[in-house]
Image 1 (tube, helix red, strand yellow):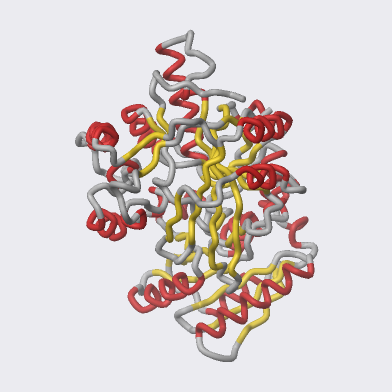
Image 2 (cartoon, rainbow, N blue to C red):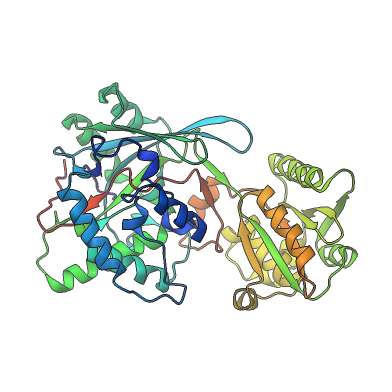
Length: 458
C-alpha cells in the first residue's frame, strides 16, 4: 500500500537566517494580497518569493515569475541560505496551538516522502474535488523549480501511536527547528535518521492507506508532474523524486487533530426578511429564535446550542443570523427531512447525513432556491472559518448592500471519521467541507526533484 520513505530535506540555514518567523509563511492558498505585501517586506528570503501566490483564477499572466522563482531557489542554495541535510530522515513535526475553544493542544505528525499513486489505486484517498486552473499554476511552478515547496497534509490510522512513539525513542533532545507563527502557535521539527526506526515506519505503512486532509491540488499537481516526466523518459527510475510527494502525516486518532467548521455567508439576491427566512427554513427544520443579548452573544449562544445538539448525536443542527434585522435562529433538522428531500435522496447514503451537504443541497438550494451554479457564477457564497470574522463581514455587507440580503449560516465541524468514510466510498464532499487546523507552515522543509536526487527506500 503506501510507500513511506525518508528524504534529505532542504531548509533554511540558521547561520544565515536568524529569525525563521520572517521567512516561513502560511500555505500559498490562504495568503491574501495584503498578507503577501507584509510577508515581502519582512525579509527578501521569504518563502513567498519561491512558493508564490496562486494566479490561476485571476487575470494576471505569467511574466516570468516561475523562472524568477527557479533562479532564486538556485541562488539561495549557492549562497548557503538554503542547505540540504546530508542524511535521509523522517522528521517529527509537532504543533503546539491554541484551539478556538481555549484549550492548548499539541498535534503530532511526521514529514516524509510518500510514493505517488493514482486515486483509483486506493492507496492515497481524496475527499474533495480539484480544479484544473489551480493545478496548472502549481504544475508550472513545480516543473520549473524542480522542487516541492510545501507538504500535503494527510491522515492515517494508528490507534496505538506506534509511529510517533517509535520515532520519539530515537529523536535528538534538541529540536532541529522551532518557530512561532502569526497566531502564536509553535512549530517544532526533529530529524530522525536512525535506520531501524526508519525501516519500522516504512513497514508500518506497507498495508495502510493515507487520506488527504489538505492539499488535494498539490497532490494532483505531483501526479501530473510525474506523467510529464514519464512521457519525457519512459525509463524513469523508480527511485526518482518525481515518483514521490512530500507529506505531513498525522494519525486520525491523535488527540491534537482538530477540524474546524467553515461557515457560509450567503447573499440572497433581493430582499428577504427574517420572518420570511424562518418560514422557508421551517419546511424541514425545527426553528428556534435566540432573542437575548448583543449580536456577538446571539452567535455564541447559537454555536453553543449547535454543539450540544451535535454531542447528543441526533440530526444535524445549524445556526443562521440575519444581520439586517439582528435576529438569530437555531435550525434542527427534522427526522423525516432527509427522506422527503429530492436533492438529498439523489445523494449516496454516506453523504446524506453530512452537515455541509445538508446546508448546500437542502438549506441553500431547496429552501432558498439558490442552485450551485448560480452561487458560483454570481459569487453568492463566501467561506469563512472564523465565526467572529464571518459576523463582522455579514454586518458590514448588511449596511453597505441594498440589492442583496446577507445571511450568515453557521455549521458544526465535519468529523474525521466522516472524512474517512466518504474517502473509502470513493465519494467527494462539497467545497470547503473541512478545515484542518492549524495549517502547516511553508518553508520549514523543501524537497528537491532534481534528476541527481535519489529516494532511498529502507
